[in-house]
Image (cartoon, rainbow, N blue to C red; front, side, top):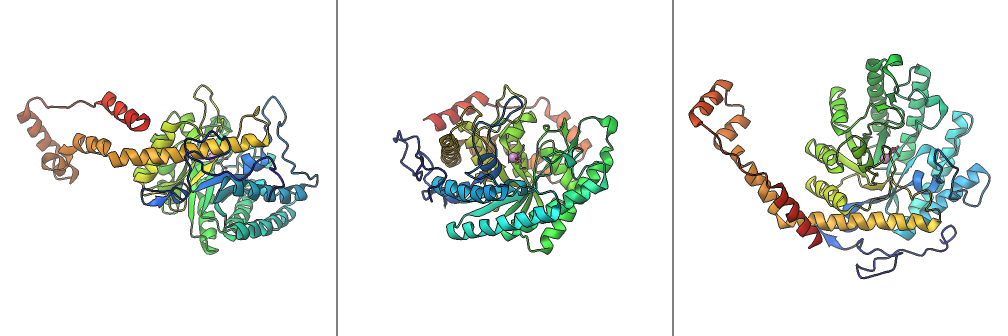
Length: 437
Ligand code: XUL
Ligand code: CO
């Protein structure tokens, strides 16, 4: 298949000495590391929306890349787009892709026709998957682009819009199941508010949970055994998104009894928008047993919005893979590149450069995370720092066996207490040495 990206051939691993920009230098899919192949660890996914759909428009200008795929009729375009997607995935050696319903087929002017179009494209995608062995990492519904969702979808002020969102989710779930998807994402597109002056926050949050519960019950009834994910984001498009960050989402899921079905899909750029590091969000998800999947990208810390850049930060990738390895690896999740080339990077080759950069960055991140864990000094430092909790007084406090009065008696008898150094600079140098060598 060489129809849509004729100037690029199959991208292969050539090793770190290679100076071929259209080759992998770190991503060696079948190389074994920490008990699995790189391919199995990383579970890279292509994002249909950025890669196949987005043309480089911004608030100030039209698209800079042609994504019509040589067709004018919208359905012919959608079919060619699917063919192009599989050509690109073959060339980049992707095993997975992620999609919104509206990425794969254009919306018609009524729901019946829209769904018919989706079925037609799903037939084609199913065939392409069968031929190539590629799979869906997760599916989702676009509940934010159409003007009907201007007040939100699950959190809309009218029940009619809620019903429309539910119908769209029902169909997106059917598509995900039909295409064998291992996950389904709720990213709260316009689930938030611009001003509390016009917002019934209690009702909106309850309704969002109701919609998620309806989705879970329906999906399980049609045989979906994968994971649901919420993808936290603090702002954009609304001023305040309800799924602000990992902590907020975990609290929400528990409050509404959704925590058995949902995990988190943590996105790097969303973490930094929330004022957290990427690793902070991953850690919070991991320690709560909810690290499901990752949207691998990066933002620009000097900008206050979601720039969705291809990830090139090696430290962030290493800490991400550290959290993933510590969580025992991905099960249904993976690394979805929710990333796009810059508007001025306007050739089709730039998409390949972007993905190669991202895949190599995460492959290197995996190697470095494995090195940090195998080295053991970081884990040992942590174990030593908290050693007093393993026996004696610490163990009894943890077991709930000590009263406040007893602790007071202990402190009175003890006099002053010893606290060691946190040794941050030593640890930072240790990590630098492990990373840079
Ligand atoms: C938006 C975003 C979405 C979700 C899927 O910021 O990250 O593309 O990943 O709806
Ligand atoms: Co995302």
